[in-house]
Amino acid sequence: MTAVLLRAIGADFGFFNGDERVNDSARFLAGELVPTQHFYPPFFNYLNGVAFVGLFVFGMLFDMWSNTGEFRQVYFDDPTPFYVTARYVTAVIGALSAPLFFSCARRVGLSLGGAFVVGAFAAVLPIAVFMAHIAKGDTGLATACLAVVWAFLMRLETRNIRRWDVIIGITVALAFGFKQSALLVLAPLALGMIVVLARRESLGQAFRSFGMSVLVLLVLWPLMNIGILLDIEGFLAFQNIQTVMSVREEDPFGIGLPITLRIFGDTVTGLNPILFAISLVAPVWLLAKTCRLDLRDALLAIWIANVVSVIVISLTVGTRQPEHLFLPNLTIQLLLAAIVLADMIRVYVNIPKLIVVVTACAGFLLMALGSANVLQQAVVQPVAAQLVTYLAETYPEARVQSGLALPVPQTVAAQKMEFDRFDRLGRKYEIDMPEIAEERFLAENAENALFWVNAPFAMSGLEGDETQKADFPVQPHAWPIQPEEWKLDTWIAQDFDVFVVNDFDYLLAESRSTFIRDFHAELLDRCDRARDYKARKPLFLEFDITVFDCSAL
Picture 1: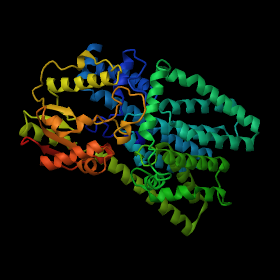
Picture 2 (picture 1 turned 45 degrees about the vertical axis):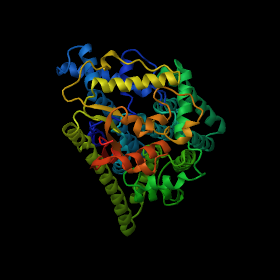
Picture 3 (picture 1 turned 180 degrees about the vertical axis):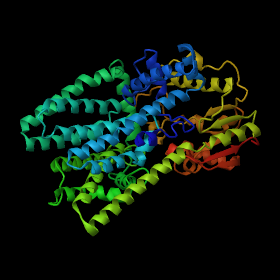
Picture 4 (picture 1 turned 180 degrees about the horizontal axis):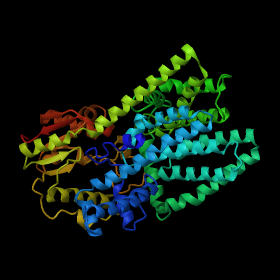
């Protein structure tokens, strides 16, 4: 329950994340199985769609809506209930890591008390608490990969071999259902599992078990992700785009490894220095004669497979390492560290035991403080609330270009400008844009509406100069930077006076796009810097905000 609460508090953190495909979950309710984007498998969309049925029933019971038409209209008026529901689903999935930690600990011979301690570490892992606040597949992937480890441990020394082979296949199917990048975690783990089974039983039995699990995967995964089979061409196109976004060929070999080490040792996005150090020396303990854990060969194989996975991922992505990238690996690494600490506590006595207990408590405290930091950021009011008040009072009639979605309605004209841009780029790249629901179109200006449009950024990973010449199949909203849109005079000619910039210092000096850097240098040179706001939720991708007034031009 604690694990669920930590992941559910602050679920409505004030704005939406672009990776939360709530629109595709809503489309699923309307019978559309093919998602609008294939960056991730659609299974999580379907899962959230089922949860929205529960939301509908809940709303009916509490008079939030009286029929499906009103329910649908709420989505277009304010989709917050849908986002929060999807985030609660994610929170529950993430919280399952705690009982899985407990069960793994019991399986390798720890007492109830020791297993409870191990489970407590899972409950407060800060990066897991944070990612469970965002309705995307990373949390599900981490829990599913952990479930594979759990099922593997349960498979060893059992009479029900086929049952656990099937369960392993189910957990693998779930992992691939959440994200196809499960391959980078589970491929090394599969090799480790085969080696362990071959040594314990026979090579033939190991491959028979592997084959059974793969068969279950091949049966379940297509059913769980039918939308991919219905649009295999679109899926492959988006995988091509994903490669362009994630792999930076210009990065020197191995440049990402120091970044990875910093992530794993970080107090919020990693394990913290204490638990990271324990996880690194875990193999030494597993090989020591004093270790009293069962299935030590399996634990050692899991450790080696996980480290290989981390190195492969780091070498592949280079410097592009978002905070969620290693969530499955961090979860598995924490499991091993917590199990080793619990075993040390029961083995040692007197001063050595006191040292281990203090170490474990210090590591747990750092994790708890990291999670507290996550929750503090989740519940604090977004700085955008202050920003829109300032804009409404100071520039009520101005045209505003904004680097963040403002929590205030657009005018009809502003919305039309954005939709016209989408149509124009669709024609440019000869692609069919997704149909926009009739309810999405504004009929009149709300009383508090402002004329604001989003800055024309590309998706993260497609903004670099190299994408201008990259050969990839452009898909809706997955296009490179449009150079003509990053000239200040283009906007001035359209009567834009105010520019709200998200993370100005980064865009000015570090953006991978020459066009973006030049645009913000021009803003600094030609316009007045009217107001600055300090970010309150940096973990949730809220950045420092700068307002430029270019009305004098």
